[in-house]
Image (tube, rainbow, N blue to C red; front, side, top):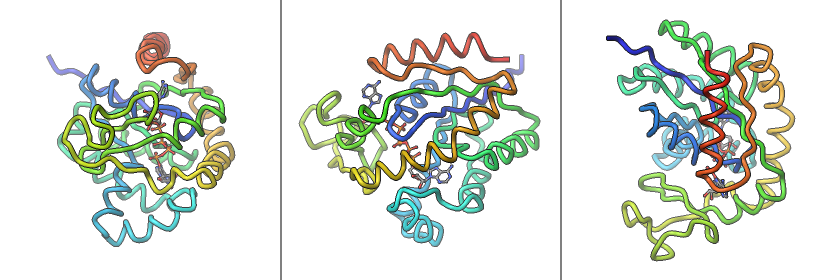
Length: 222
Ligand code: AP5
């Protein structure tokens, strides 16, 4: 029996838990986790031409130009691992990107099954992001108070020293939140009009939020 690929978009403001939950969805439904933010950070760390160009936008909390992100996504979607379906984290952030994703999926004879949006208030988002620490080697994500690494500085999974992201400084966080409200609200309307948007309370423990996401998926998925 051939199983159809499942494609799920995770939406929500910076720090809402998209990465945390996309990883869980990936494990539960056997999906490739596609994080445009993580892919961009890899390019920055490698010092590639794309990374050099993207870095300036990211450090100011602005969106990276669509053409650069689209090129990166296209490559990822054409990789063999993406054939099973994907959990998109950080894409699309504009209606232009939402249309582009539709086109890329159509070329693969696929269509988006569900868009899940996580809602969290600004004050909690700032606490989550200022306390976030990430592993530059394997991408694991921690929080200094709610989910610290066991030995305080080394990643539980691979032992590398965990670091604070450049864009997790409060002034940059405020700008990212402003950009999100301005550009991404229309993306929610876009998927709502199509009847595939599930809106979920993103507060509570990651387990509680994950259970809500699974329920919303059952309700909304076509
Ligand atoms: P990106 O990396 O996508 O950042 P973001 O959207 O700002 O989202 P975050 O990664 O900050 O947060 P998250 O929602 O994944 O939360 P997480 O799970 O880590 O993008 C970064 C930049 O790249 C952008 O600003 C832009 O410049 C560029 N970019 C990316 N995509 C682009 C695109 N499509 N177009 C143009 N530019 C693009 O959780 C956050 C913290 O909270 C962690 O510490 C975690 O442990 C904790 N936490 C998670 N869940 C919970 C919970 N339930 N309770 C308590 N704490 C929790």
